[in-house]
Image (cartoon, rainbow, N blue to C red; front, side, top):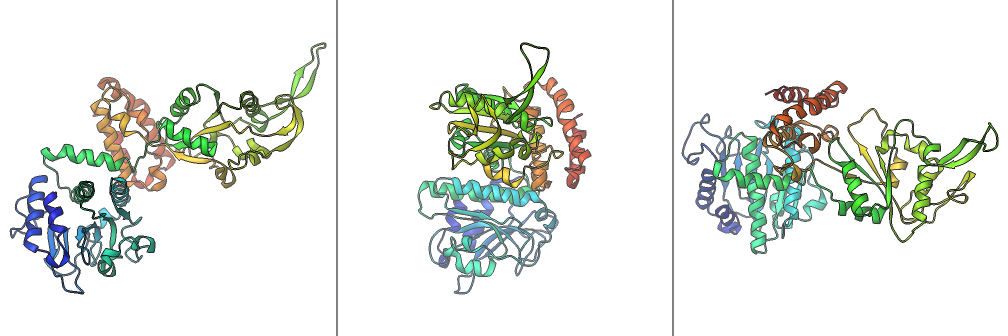
Length: 498
């Protein structure tokens, strides 16, 4: 890759077409299977892709080097998906990116029309931008929207390629603008970007890598996948709670939301708090408090007394030691109608105003009267299963009062052989690819978590997949949650028997 890096970072006026062609030719032959010297004249049936180099450095020209679909003329406008590098207008590094040919999205309309391509480009861009001296990176939400101009805030970061943007700004759908400092970290970021985008181009065209480069390519893929499935740690959640006080962990089943909450309570809060679970029968009276029948001590009768609920008991315990943060964990927080359960107490859930209070209808011994307030050391952490569509979504007023933190399947957990056998890791990789490639944003949030794939024993692994994962996917199908790619899900379910 350093040969490509040296060739494309040559100043615009000194671009050497032969040197660029040789650099691409050498690297592609080394990295991918069944690639002969692609500079040789070959029939379109033999070609896997085409290298287009424009080294015209005249004032109004826009030089570039591009990997494009093979079904194109050797000059003039082309169509479909392409990997492209553009030299800077004057000096500095080349702009690296993905472009839709100005002619049309064909012959790659099936690739470009699926959510997966845009999703992968976005993850790669986010990853590159986080690398040391990563520079600036961006990707368009919908690559095929060539009618949309590049946002001004993005264009302002790409001033060194203004001539390029004037001509190709609307068809450039993912890009990386390196810092150009020339340091090792700057060059490493450029190589990472080139590697990831070329691999993406080849993967989409069904071109396999050679075995010698596959391990390195998978390490790169895992790094950008981590930006598609970001992880959140106990420390991250504890820091968010200390700042926002009221947080909800949301995600599909099997991602370890409840496990994370329990670990947080045990470790970060040293057990100072407790866990409750909401359900369809949870009411204002059971959470805040209300009148309940109490047996008279000196008779066989009953009388009604104001009894505090779960929140009041948490307030009472937190107020007993205000110097120690107290955590109330509400598992399955969206299984109850939270607006009704909170009632007027919703007013108290304002992280920036800890002095708020409300007056209740009755005196409660737990709070010493009718005035209800939340101690500043009381933190509330909810868990929410985004796959259960039978439950109404939390309303805007409730959402505004909580910070929502997504919890995704953990690639790190499944990488451990002690946690997951090879068959389980393969099945997760297959299912992940199905969701990345075909699921819309709503359906992608239903990707089953790593808990469904955590089994180191190969025999028990098959049983786990058939008795735990299969029913979940069948339920997704029955409820219409994955109807847009139902055939892919059915095919995956059938593969569980093999």
